[in-house]
Length: 630
Image (cartoon, rainbow, N blue to C red; front, side, top):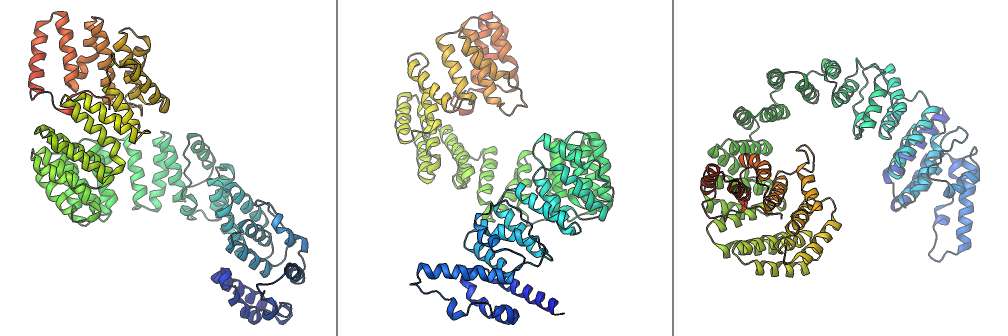
């Protein structure tokens, strides 16, 4: 009974310390020592009168105090030698010690907590690890593991937890700790073994906390994890079944994945993440109507689930069923009328299907939310533009102040001003942009130079960029725009130097490579390096992350220009006819026209000339119809 009472007092003392937890509160613990510890222990404590050090304490007094503390540890922790505590400073942070089993020393734990509070985490971790291997030290182990996770790498924490579990094999929570840490450390063999142990103990154990944040990123790790999980019987465990299903889906085994996700759904039939994973799997093996029917039925069973609405809507959009998606969005908007995400999506789909009245109504509602004001204004500007209400569009777009939207908004305003031949207003818009947003100053100078170039003031545009490059010497966008304004023949040396510098800064930039190819071919129509650079760009497949449709077309134009210079008219047509049919531009049309003229095909010349006049009759001032590399 006395032993139980002592243990209770010790636990209360430790709890009190952990609540106070900082050196600033240490003086409050003194009365607790006297109240909670037996007389035999409290009598060994230095009195509060003697324990207070004066500012003028000498070095000898400090040494004496250290000796007293060491004697105190010796007296109150018989099983632990003085050397073990005195030399804690020298312990490696990852050392796992297993002293003789007895109860943890409260004073050692206090020492560790004071060390942690003073930033000496290495000492705190080492002491806690020592004490955690004693009897009845579960709480100490959990504190030690917490400190280890904050101050050591994941492998060291796993090593400590697994060593402790070997000594305490019946401590079930430690199984969960070890399983989670093994997964995080990519030790899938140990993870599989520990998960199997947990499921033998409780087949329906909740593994959700274990699996949080452990999904591997690499293909090899995913395969290793799947191999470790496959032997484990997960039929009664939803968490493990869904993890297997996700991995199998990832490896394009939807039929087997479906078996596992069905097992999870038996346990939790209305859990939305399980439902959407099954829908993803069905999309690989079933026709769209079957998948839509499954999601629709699940949504009807869970009418309050916003995520199921959004899943079905996005799937309809993927299927190009925009009208059906829009109708469902309006239904979702009525149900979740204060949800800005759904309101914005409904507005965007309304714009997409040209339901401008609905779009404007939704966007004006969205504008009442300060967090969505800029997005609402931006898309209200787009809506007004599509309805050819350009003044209204400028009003909204000039009101956009969100940093990730403001540059695109001001570009549109500049384009509107140029359509009205209001050059001064366009330039003023760009000057205001760089005053309000210093981060976009380089882009504003490039846009201003482009406006000047369109007005036939190429020399002034070049001077502007030269001044801007002195102000922003590290801006690649300014350097590249400046290079683009230089003449390929007259300024060959300067332009080549600039482009070589840019390629050294960013060797993978395809725009720099293409501009260099154009420079080479302009000075040598048969330049092998130039042809190779441009050809490499058009050979990039559309599903390659480097692919860009505009860049691809620019490269075709460069190659077509070179072929035209060599009187290879059929090759020009081969390069450009199909792209022009799909996405006509003025530059492509001009090259095609000259190729047909070279072949003497008068019928195609007349037809193409009429098409060019119809498309670009407003005077070739449309920025979107000119091929630029910046």
